[in-house]
Image (tube, rainbow, N blue to C red; front, side, top):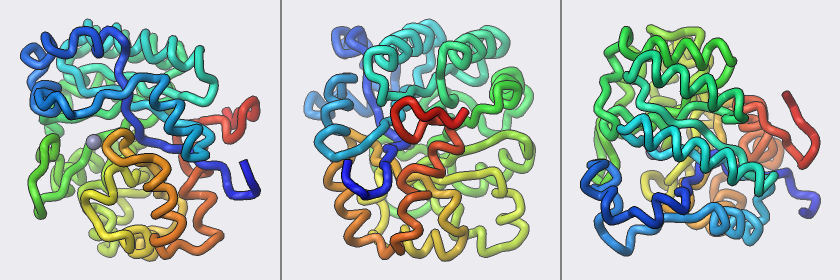
Amino acid sequence: MSSLAAVIDAHTHMFSAEVHRTRESLLEREPWFGMLYTNPTAKLATDEELIRAAADAGVDRVVACGFPWRDLGRCREENAAFADAASAHPQLTWMAIVPPHAGTAAARELDRAFTAGACALGELNADAQGWDLADLSALAPVLEVCIAHDRPVLLHASEPVGHPYPGKGAATPDKLVSFLSAYPRLKVVLAHWGGGLPFYELMPEVADLCRNVTYDTAASTYLYRPDVFRVVVDIIGPDRVLWGSDFPVLGMAKFLRRTRESSGLLPAELPPIFSANAARVYRLPLHHGAHTA
Ligand SMILES: [Zn+2]
């Protein structure tokens, strides 16, 4: 890369070869997967395609999020496949996925996945996996594993207003704030600009609750004008925003170019948002071989 800051895409998606092979049969068995991928033009990426997109965009590292499967057995298989993909591609880091309300069996799998190198738990999605953000006792065993390993959880988040879209769900800022207040020690990343929660950080008590929260920019172009970067950074500062595309939802190269050209961010704000914040929150190497944790 040139003298530009290192870039980490902190929110991307890929699927194992097994999911690609069994796509048709999964459409029924996993309703959320069916809703998103019954349309044959809805794209599933392989690890090779993800790595190629990163190379084409000049992205140094990608974080592959798990899909919110309901079935713990499928989560186990996908976690194992993601660990294999990360061994094959040193620039790929992966998140573990479990159904977070599945108690001690899910907690055991998550503990195993963190030991195998997962950088976080995610992308959890209450609507997809059939759990409730308010059901804290069901979520406790899994969230305690995150706290014990000092690893964050990435939650899908959605806007209470605006246009509907497949996969939007109802993880809105009001529910997210109740969840955050119950788990002050948990590190939380909220996807898709937190469904607009950063705007409520103008309220001091909300800002206080969100101290340990970072937001990623996944799918930004579908949701907001490019000025969302400037507006959010003016409210919460440059240290709690992670640049992420939601690849293949957004093209990585195009979104990177748009962010550089139209976000209104100052040169000094780019390195934290493009890489340093993700390296800190997910404990990633900024450059090959240079581990931060
Ligand atoms: Zn999402």
